[in-house]
Length: 368
Image 1 (tube, rainbow, N blue to C red):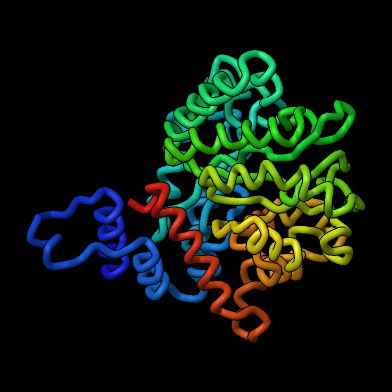
Image 2 (image 1 turned 90 degrees about the horizontal axis):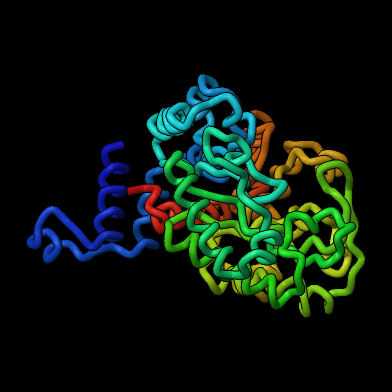
């Protein structure tokens, strides 16, 4: 533990460029974030490393704190119920209690997209009115209003201890009748790309973690929360349209890319995108993304109809995901640990994922 704390202190000094004295700086060269992440990982058990790969749904305050010691989570994802009957001080305390209980500082995430997906601002104790949708903002004030709205959103979330917003939505939809339309900009790929860049740049300036979603692009498909969705569009449509906003967000410095559960036949007709090595290969090699790849919730019907939770978690890691978003973590985490122990998952793959996670936490100042 002492070694771990000293590494965290070194990380803080490297990021800020400060130390306890000029002589110490002269004697010990500042380590790179890569080197610091590797040192931190070398001091972690297998259980701690696998735990880092899970962003789990927040339960209740007491269980949330006690489960941190048991499962070593990478972070919690908060939903509307976690804000509904709480004051701002209540939320701050809940988050602080979790952070205090965790050896490795946690991602604390929400989906605060604006419009129909607001977890925090839908309640008046946090904001006078809910954040507006990307489409509403664009129609009212273009990218300038989108940027100022993103700034206010970052300030509100950070004031509560939240350090990751699973946004922006990069999906391209110009069809008002489609499932995803209300959550998108409602414009073509080029306009959506500029929107995504604007949002990610503001989030990065505020050290707010961002997640581009839902790769490889949702299009006008149905709802994977309730069913298995198959997307039969040709690969050219993705390359000429859907990929563009993701590429723009990656260039702007996005921290994460969230992969959908759609079965995209042009890339892999056997597995949902979130469980497909072929889809992840495209994201890594064609879009050159080296940040955190995160799944959509593995408890969604598109996955539970396809396979059970434990198998889904193992397959998600083998496909190339770094961070698994889940509800039934009591089943999924032990399954991944066992898969590493029996050689079904290479520990080197776990180390690579955890390195991305730790580097992101250092970059965002979460581990200062």
